[in-house]
Image 1: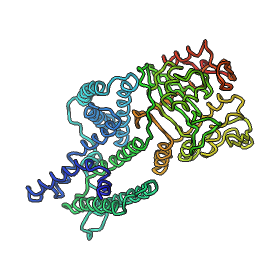
Image 2 (image 1 turned 120 degrees about the vertical axis):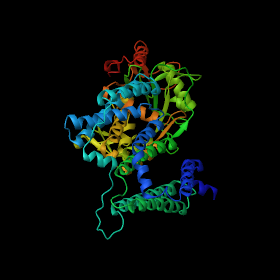
Image 3 (image 1 turned 60 degrees about the vertical axis):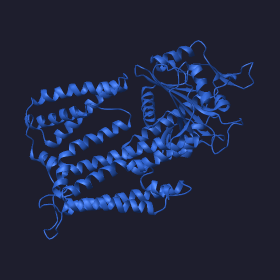
Image 4 (image 1 turned 90 degrees about the vertical axis):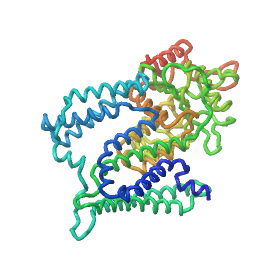
Length: 546
């Protein structure tokens, strides 16, 4: 019963503490003021007077969940507002175009401040503190400390009410109640959809009375407040600024929900070595070949099917280096062997240590991609387009590729997985496979960033479910680090700084180690390669050209 009650309150009683406290305060003053708190005019005044604060608060929520702070938000809002007002007054700009201009100015300011935080690593507190002073002064400079009149449209958007379209015989504002009904319907849809999803993966699903209770309580509150607004004095209803806030709040809630969903569902593992930091940001991306308990290539324990080193240097240069899984390396405490054997011997932590010893870079974050997850993620984005300029019928991977259907084809998850795993039929062996693996990941990232994903809740949910099911990360990683990795991956793919390190012998057979053929990096150039990688001085010509 206690578990069900916790589910009723979102999993934690503390989550509703602030709401409960607010409700208690409202009820106290409702009693002390003889019922004036919940009168229509008072609620309208509260909405009208606090809309701008709520809009800023919504934006700040997104900043805070990203782990930052913005002290300049008030000054930036004032600067954008005065720019819009002056544009309409002095430039006779159409109000809607003025709004777009204001949004553009806000984006420029946000990009400028983000540049100092993201590229140069200056704390957001310092950057936005300076921004607060700068834009406060800019607001005074542009507006000359004067009140700027705005057109009637702006007055309506800032202090108007939802118009009534119903006949006079209906004693309430019909559009307000329609919007409330839509909100309750959306609430019910979300609750039952969530219940169905939880029932699919929980051994003891939440009883049906829990979502029904939430729908009744929250839906009843929505309808009750809507009725107060809809039956206020004639000519009033729910304020238009309140509608704007609700829309923005729903968008922010969706983003916050997805953010939290990713963070809560990620699988985590102890992977980092604890070595001293090196300049820049480094991710180790590993594809695991253990699928459903079946281990490939007749080895003991799972091996790393692919190993990629994603690095963002201090100067902003990003590169993606594929380390062939047969790369000949010195594994700490195990001696010379193939790099993928480190995963089999000691799991993610030993693999991290091995890569750090090879590259001289400290791995900041570890990301493991289960190969079954590749198929699910590709299907979640509706397939990806990949290219191959020769026919293949590979028994080991299951890839069948017919160039008569085109050298570039849109493939589903199953074929994308086979495309990523095919090695023996590739004339470049493991190096070629690394190229295809990068191509698949890049295609998924690009497809996920399209408008079709941005405006499709079902595709977003499918992508989150598939992605979190596929990924295993280090214990310090969260949604922000995953987002930064995706951006860095796109940057590296776009710049062309991808490939394998210089290779001396792709079929090296060491005399002192019975490990079969391996890939030997060039002793003379590979150390220099990793030095360039660390310092952000790589060029496309530095990668293996075979």
